Amino acid sequence: MRSFFVYDPVEKQFKVLSLTWSHGNAISEEHHVLTLETGKLSWRLIECSVPHYPENESVCIDGVLYYKAKPNQSSLRDEVMIICFDFRSEKFSFIRATEPFTGEVHRVETLNLINYKGKLALLKPNGSYSFSRENTSFEMWVLDDLEKKEWSKHIYKLPPQWQSVVPNYILKCVGVTGSNEILFSQHIPSSYPFYVFYYSLEKGTIRRVEIQRMREFLNRRVYTFLNHVENVKLMKDVL
Picture 1: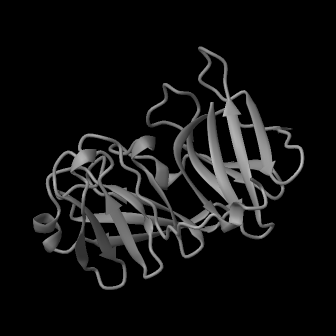
Picture 2 (picture 1 turned 45 degrees about the vertical axis):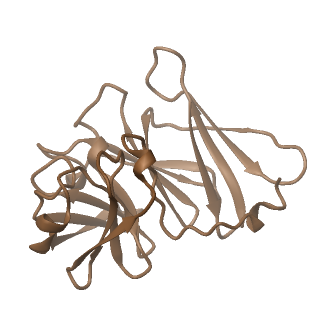
Picture 3 (picture 1 turned 120 degrees about the vertical axis):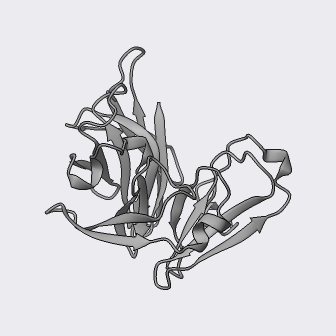
């Protein structure tokens, strides 16, 4: 089972999309949606005409959920898909493998989905599987038209300071901040101190920020979030 929890800012509703598959079958078989609201809660069965195996990484933009997928669990590079689920219409659509999603050195698990100015964007490090201090540039593909599947390509060069500021470990792209900076973080910290890195798309500069009191989390999975506000007010009517 794999589930995605999102908030629809238009309908002002919290919803959950759940995908299940039977043991030994690596393709999602049933798809259910739950709206978190007052009263009796019930799951709705949703049809999906695209057999796929969902990956963990996802991003929700204006009530549309995008997540990475493969035709089946054993697929590596071929037929990479981006699944789109509109929480208002509760319908699936998909983007099959095109230039942004394929290549000799890119696999589905290395692609980074982000929200760039209200549009789906994909980040790919050039010349390697993942972001590290060895990178000198990266590509950003922006989905300009979802219906026509039209993408625009942007190439960004990392500053010379990148190699001296970034330690020797793998980084993951978290997303883009409101000040138009890409946030990079380590997924499983292997050394101390723990840093996050901000790359300015406008200035082409990099800055490093230390997160304190992370020694106890060495070699454990760490999740980094953008624009987090600790406020349960939005949930008060559904709890």
